[in-house]
Image 1 (cartoon, one colour):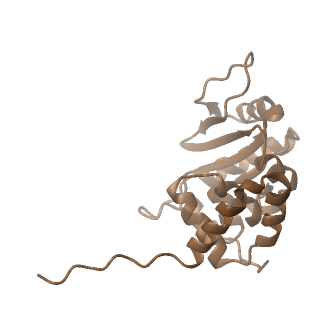
Image 2: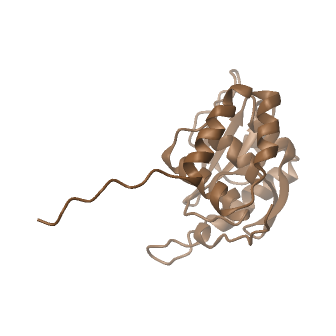
Length: 207
């Protein structure tokens, strides 16, 4: 994989006002809290993209944990001063996502019940982010996660990874062959669309 220089400036500065967002301080606090509590996790989303050299604007920190660690992660984050906007019911299965806030910053805690997130968490590699070292999803992990998303911004993120980095597509294919071969055609279609997007529609003639 081609080495890319981490760039988190867009994560820390509002491009409209030019002011610091405060996300960096809160993100460090969240990541250190999870590390102290020894909760397995992985940074995903825009922060992971930035750590891997593909920054885009965001106002939150996305973290993935497995179902069994959800309440431990919530306890650690709440002890660090984060308040859960999502109701926490310990008598039921964890919610798919919890939104936690502190001093204007947001942490989105994705609770994974299966693949590919379980593999993403297990195989995340350390990277520097917001002045802290944390387990971060690799580019291959992010491609896998975006493959299961239909959000427009994730299509764009997928295309950037495929066209701007040396992401290991062979590794992704091998994973899908073992875990979910039905998704191989979807991967092929999206890679093709990213590398050879359709031409824009013709513009009308001048009036």
